Length: 269
Picture 1 (cartoon, helix red, strand yellow):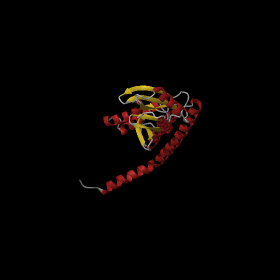
Picture 2: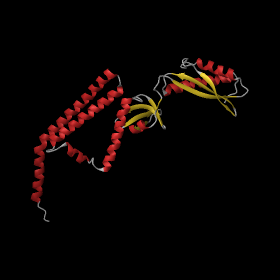
Picture 3: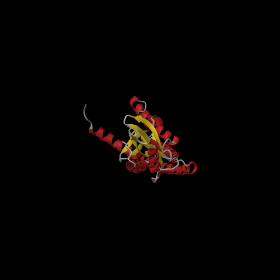
Picture 4: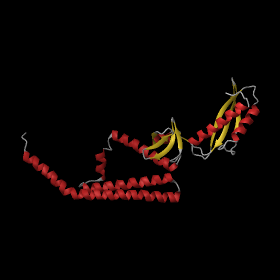
């Protein structure tokens, strides 16, 4: 087949002319989409402010703000495509994205699953942004709950990205759900030691430590008779229930208890 340079040139020229002819529509479509983008941001801010003022739920404001933002952006995209592309219909967008294919369908199923889980997490509020939670081997502070995943900052300064569906279907421990937290430590004493005197010594020591609450009061319980002695469990409450404060309280209590046990010459391990 002989190459016809004139026909190729004519085709290119026709494409250029077509683009120039549609250029004003492209500009209008771009301007429309930008306007919808600004409108979406304004709607997200307004909905969030109204929701926080009326309902006093920060998570709910995030949900409503993100939903309004996504809907307006999607409408703006459709309108811009209708303006820029002759004969475009929303049904053609589905065909272009290939949503009918099996592979893309599975991918969107996971995306939709995580999105719905994120919405439900924000609405039901099992935990909030700023709470400290534990999921399996991960523990840290919730930084953000996005549409696909939740970001957790661990105590050693790392970020863990957890899919929302995992948080919704698995057991999550919320360490900061309540204002108080109970700590405990086990101490083993010899069978020859005076149990009542040891209990009272531990209680007298712990009650004087700053940060240990009197209500609920500390207590000491016998939890086990081991081969090497009697196992006592010292329990006390502190506030607030965050990780740093828990470590500081435990450090102060164990330091004072060690000194008290040593001074009373109690055989402990």
